Image (cartoon, rainbow, N blue to C red; front, side, top):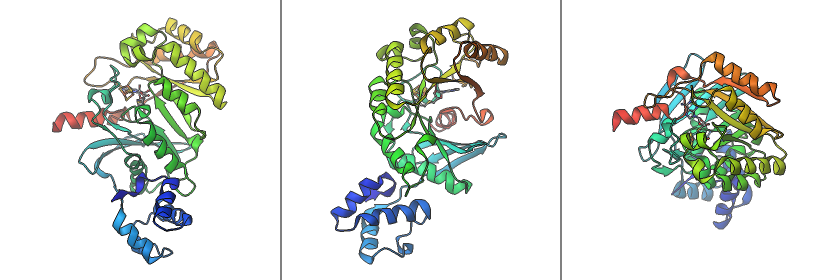
Length: 343
Ligand code: SAH
Ligand code: SF4
């Protein structure tokens, strides 16, 4: 039995052709499942009996099950989902004036182990399949009964350490017969796996890329993100420039402001030197404290001064709070608490 949600439209077409069915059957199936939300083969009235029998025998839907659901006062909703094998992941729904966005998990735990991040507290147990990532968006849409227009791949895990499945996931949600989420409404965030940034630059889809920078020099970055030893800042910046050149798209840098660590004006000046001349945008996020770590978020006034220092020197930047701070919505926080309780 194969999980339907694992199939891209091309993959499903190939599978059906192999078994003597027609290419358009794959489109019909996608439409039933993703557009009409019908998963009972018997209700797929325009399919032949043989195709329905084939589906009954070979396909199933690996759904995620709601284990916990929290709603924040700012409208953000956090889901702990249980996978088929009993593992727990988390997914966040954020409401914006431009639509609803969902933040998905790509791995069980994360091996990158950044010193400030709750997701890195648990070593990676395994990658999620494409279907397990798709099922998160499908379930949020089913529960909320609202359309998801944007997706950010910024939940637990390093998507570029699970590259193939992440790209298959994007293919499925972007498909006109799938969830039809525009490529420009999808953002993948990476801690800076340089060879994968290069590979991503060559992908045909217009998906946005965000790089977690969080530091303005190598020493500082290595001290909070050990991946920087493997792919130092200079290489990350070079790969980012190549991405911008190849794709003609603006790149986003995420920079969490950690009190007393990376939030001084001279850090902002260093950042300006690094990014000058690049078509980029800096997303400043005040750190959302995690119980297990002693880091604090930068004070509002200091964060504003940092933001202004960037803007004054021609670097486009926004300053925002992590959404859903009151419900542990920062990356990996809720799952981490849950695991602490049940393990
Ligand atoms: N592994 C990828 C994507 C998942 S993390 C990456 O690192 O980019 C998504 C973003 O959330 C990253 O920029 C990460 O640094 C940030 N983040 C992690 N913990 C946070 C916290 N407690 N407060 C604010 N941002 C956090
Ligand atoms: Fe992994 Fe990203 Fe968290 Fe670092 S910030 S531990 S790469 S999820």
